[in-house]
Length: 295
Image (cartoon, rainbow, N blue to C red):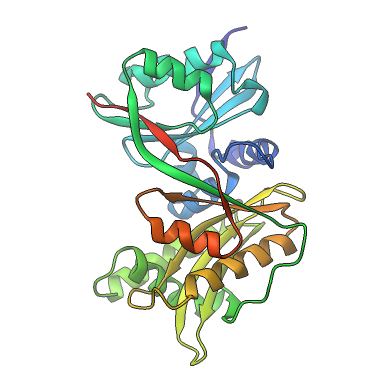
């Protein structure tokens, strides 16, 4: 059966996120999650649609990709199609040819966890492996232990301190008025968009009331794995247990949203992050590298 690839219209993004909902399975690979689309939607729903690629069989999505930057394609594949050789070959052709509008020439990466057929296709075509990642998972059947942080759901005036903590953790430097304005605008764009309905942004304060941690959690619907993306601890405040405490808060909120489990993926090169999630009851799966074309 013929497989085609398309770039969706903005009006199609929500239905494709709902398709990704159904592909999230406990015990399955940690693939592209609807929360990844939601986080990307800080750029706007039109930009999110433009960054997506969808592979269709008989008009139905069997793989959904997100171009997360110029050189990285992140994939979610329908679980029954993870070992589908025909689909793997179609995706491999799409990513190999820059004229198809997926990836450019040169060094590029594909994140396709659990897609053994695609990995075999690309490695057979001369691709290698790239950065290794550690998927982590915590079952949410039972209540989550209390966190020592005071955790607030972000809205209104809390957007600015949430943005400042996130900036401090991932970028550092001076939180200028221009940076503040841009980050608050991006958060507001995301929160006003159609992909944020089942998400929560969280701000954690220490005993003195100082914002020390920020995170967002994303539900894929009742009885499915939820995602933590991102989780940040203010620079200079690491090593004090705030990461573990915020992770517990995220897991608790996901449980309240109906998630069956909480998932997160950490760079294998960041053992402190892996240890933080493990200390909050997460179990690490074996490392999974991206697939990389080196030339």
